[in-house]
Amino acid sequence: MTDKIERLKWLRDGCNWLVTVSAGLIVASATFYKDILVSNQKCECLIVVVWAFLLTSIVSGVLCYFSAFALINILVQKGSYELKGISWAGLSYSIMLFSFMIGVLFLVITLIVNKL
Image 1 (cartoon, rainbow, N blue to C red):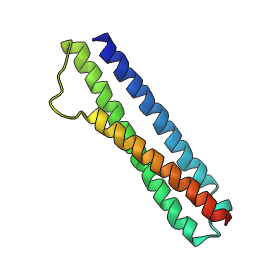
Image 2 (image 1 turned 30 degrees about the horizontal axis):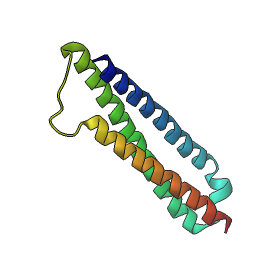
Image 3 (image 1 turned 60 degrees about the horizontal axis):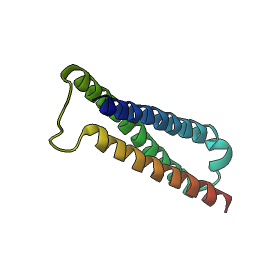
Image 4 (image 1 turned 120 degrees about the vertical axis):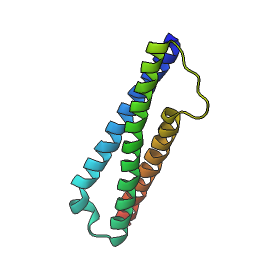
């Protein structure tokens, strides 16, 4: 039981870290938006796509955090649990990682297109 709790705590900490990084990328790109990216019309469209993916990462990260927290509470109260399908923690973590990777990829593409 403690092994499952530890894994869920690591999952929860990973969610915190990735939500923080996603929010930091949004803030950094919004801060330098007018200085760097305004000159190119293509970059304006790409940065909106980047922000959408990073916001999706943040929302699914928060959902993952609360799902992991709920599973930890169930483990502490009942001693065990059995999943009868996919858990919200696993699904939201997968969505969070996927949208974060795509968001960062589009951010890199945006910066490269801006320099061309």
